[in-house]
Length: 346
Image 1 (cartoon, rainbow, N blue to C red):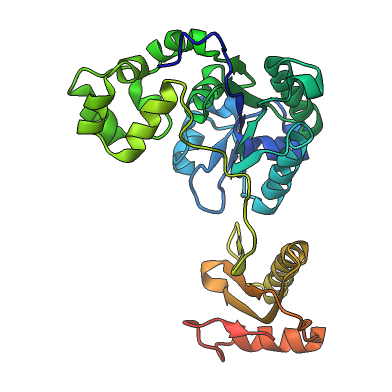
Image 2 (tube, one colour; image 1 turned 30 degrees about the vertical axis):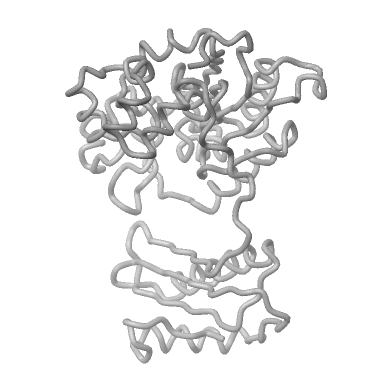
């Protein structure tokens, strides 16, 4: 146990978490929505993300939209726009990398950053670095982020949840026991409901109860992932940042579900063409080429999917005329191509 270490930050790990990220992206796109209960997920009929204004009215993720309108009749319900969300995500990573190259792109709305050893280089404390990163993210992306700073990823995760939304919480090792004592063990990153229930049977209610257990006890009763979490709660890094990220793609997919459903061929064709272009934009960004593009369209279920199989190759795309592409599309919507297998467009 290293809580009493003279060094409060033997490592400085920062966790950055976007607040209600998808809904916040929609507000950033359209500032007129600021302060309103914004919900995404219209295309699926359930709540995918909700702004804090919507959450305050009782809206929860996974609720059906007809239930949402009962508790929040003035909700602004929007279809998800994952292309836009991914753009905001890339901008988030780029801003954090101004301060450190050691960034783990954990998910579309969160990342970890290792600030260790940068105090002299940047001329500021670790807490000041975290504050500067938060300030840049909030200002440049037009939304808020919650940050946690500590010696390990698990402790940093506890910090980022401490003051949501728009919080910055530093957990130096000397103060870790105070935070852990107020954190239910089930709220610790990596501990699911079943493990929490199991620990509860042994009187482990809080993260502090768990961290104070003897290592022999932990190894006897728990699996390797939980043992790693125990070490991280005690300030010992076992989960290093994965800063390599993705190297390539085997396939790139773009999907659009229409809200409301549509059987208008021109409209569907335009969206299908947009999906192909979006897939190709991503392929060009990764310097990839492909021998084939596959598409499928299901107008009756209002679902269009474009799947692009990608590989590094010297062969350029074989060009296809708009007339040829439209002809392929028309035949596919008349059922001349099997619905069980996508039509090859190249």
